[in-house]
Structures are given as structure tokens and as C-alpha cells.
Amino acid sequence: MRHCQRRRDHTPADGRDPERRRDLRGGLRQRDDGVGLDPEWRRRLRDRCHHRRRVSLVGTIGDPANLRGLVLVGLDVGAIRATAVAIDETGAVQASASAEYPADGKASGGLERDASDWWRASQRALAEVAARAGGEVVGIGLTGQTAGAVFMDARGNVVRPAIVGGDRRALRQSVAITERVGRDRLLEITGNAVASDGLASTLLWVRDVEPVQFRHTRRVLAPKDYVRLMLTGEAVTDVTDASGTTLLDLRRRIWSGEILDALEIPPAWLPDVQESAAISGGLRPSMAGELGLPAR
Image (cartoon, rainbow, N blue to C red; front, side, top):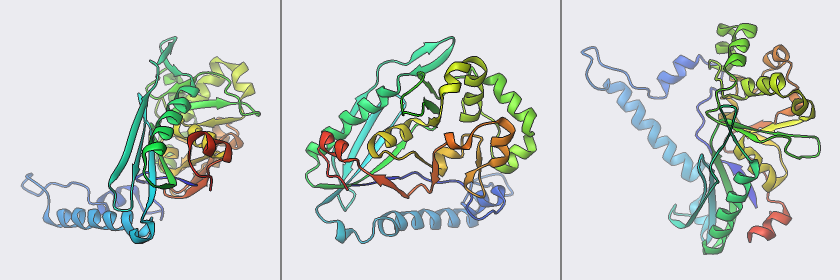
């Protein structure tokens, strides 16, 4: 089974100025009288939406006629539940299922979760949808909460509870990152200011507060990418999630060596970065059997 991430991507691929790209994307702009949308921007927005519909049906999955009788599944590793939805070649929903996580754990004012909560809920949702889909499942698309970090050792074991998006314990580290790299330089490279619950800040917080766990760390993944690893054995993320880490070179679409060096973060700890619609791996045979899905 092919497995891909399917996320709307808002990162520049061609090196053009981010502000200019926002204009070209049909951003809202007021008329000179301050009321409503400028007609030119309304046209651009309409054309862009039409292009998106065409690409989503033809450019990505090919001629829908070739998928007759086949099923695609989307899995959302959300904030409070995992949800799987199966659709046929026309986009009609064939089955859906959700599984909620236990309540978030709180530690010293932070937000944490057992990473296995995401995985177990995803398993339940996928297995239920596979049983009810009514066709051969040929691909899984992943989406999910963007902030959050799962810390793993060299053997693939989780070394501490996952830190969940919204955790603000790394505020001091986010300020330190801005001071070390420079606000203007960060914006130039990443397109974003530093978030206290972003991956860069979280990594530095664990290094400062939990040095033992940090020394054992060899890989760090976002929640949905941890689920991807369990499904496929591949450590991969997409440019959309990576763009919120304060570690991605937005124009080159790779991890920023300059920022990683400045923060002394080993690049080998980070997953490979792929485009949001790329096929990131195949379903492991053991997982296929467990979930009732074909291995591809």
C-alpha cells in the first residue's frame, strides 16, 4: 500500500519573496474605499480555487476512472482523536471512524502525552475503516496536529512523554533562539518568528531541563510522523509541518544547516523532508495484516 502525506502546502518553492507569494495566492486586499475585495484579487482567488480542484482530482491521483473500485483513506492525527475516512474514486465517503485519546497529561505546567496514544487510536480508526470500506484500499494520506515532539533513542524507543502543541515551558528557549540567530535572519530563512511550542524551542528545553533524556535522544518526530514511522518504518515529514519548526530553510525546502549549527542540534535527529503530496513509503507487512489492509 502506498502511503503519502496530503497537506495543503503554503511554503515557497521558487525563492520568491514570501510577501509577494501571498499576494499571488489571492490574498484578501481592500479596495481604495476600504470596502470588499478588489475585483482583480477576487478573480485570482477564483482561478486559484479552480486550479486546486483540478489538481486534486487529476494531477495527483490520475484519471478517476482508473481508480474505479479502489479506495483511498485519509488519517487525521488530531488534537483529541484520530479520524480515518475512506473515499472512492468520485470522492464519496465510503466509511469513517474515530478513536479518542485519553486526557492530556500535565507536567510542571506543560502538556504531555504518551505517544502510543496517537498510535493506538490511529490503529483502531484505520482497522474499522478498512473493515467497512467496501473496496481495495490503495493508499493512506496523513495529516495531523503540527506542533508536538516525540523523542526516540537509537533503538526506536520513546525516551520521555511526547510534548504536545500548546506547551509553553520553552518560552525562555524561544527568546534565546531569537537572540542567538537574530530575528531578521530567522524570518529570512524560516519565514516565521520562533514559537515557544515549536520543535526548535522544545529541543532546547529538553536539553536544558532533562539532559539525561536529551543524551539518549537520536530522533525527534511530530505526532503524525510518529504514526507514519509505525506504519511504514520511514522517518519522514512534509514541508508543511517542517515549516513550523523554526528549523526549515523555507526557500530551499531543507533543514537549515545554519540554524542547526547555531543551536547545536544534530541534523541526523530530524526526519527527511518531502513534498506534501509525496509517497513516503509502503505499509509494513506486519501492520497490513494487523489492520486488515494490503501491503504495497
